[in-house]
Length: 338
Image 1 (cartoon, rainbow, N blue to C red):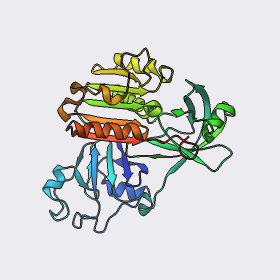
Image 2: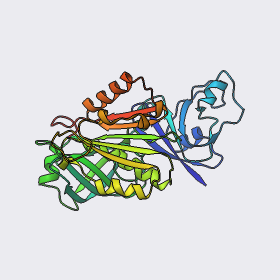
Image 3: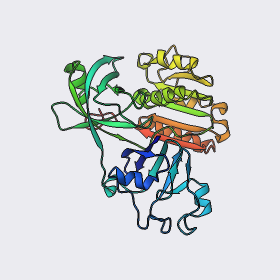
């Protein structure tokens, strides 16, 4: 039996390793040429201390209190030289990937389909050369064909599949947008590197509030598919904010989750005052008390900076400190992620 261990470094690079049953994480990492921080490897110095954010494991008791205190252990801090996983785990490593002699993985993919879902949203479907592990919510860098430029896009598909899906903002003049809408054909080759990002679905039991702005829906779709696969029964509310009615995309997919997730509901929110949508205005205007659950909620927010800033300010103004709050700002421009 082996377990998949996601090592998420402080610079956002994620590297997956396999850990055998009964094997310590530090040993598994070294075996796969990832040099995690260490000095003693005996539970004495604390140099290998990391944070396990999901998964089950044993630490035993063969380490010193000076290396890992009881309070730290209760907070799921771990010594990788002592940690033996009992399931797949996600570990946050407090150093950059390069310091551990590892880097972004690179893979290839073939374009399967490019669809213009609206005048502002493109869906890109690719077949990866091999199944790619990532954490639901993470992104990958895609090199623009015929260019040295790269753009970062969140997966909207499930981890571990050869099919990769992306929702991409169609930006007039954007390098990637122009290639996708004018040149891309089925069979074209792409180079991808990653995965990356600290915006990913965590384990938990609290109700979930998912907030998407435009194509910021992409990582939340990946999270919802993962939750459906887990047969999650957590209460889940998704607010999907766009500017115009025609900007609402993937609504059939969002509605289909109501059949797979018993605690799930979603609401579109359209800023246009002339919209036919019952929820008009901004997402912040539709955050009701039930969704916020007096702060006993995990919030995942992905959208443009003004939306992220507005939600953060609204929570502060209402005196709400969520149990968990993770967000991803995306910038769509000719000079950034287009």
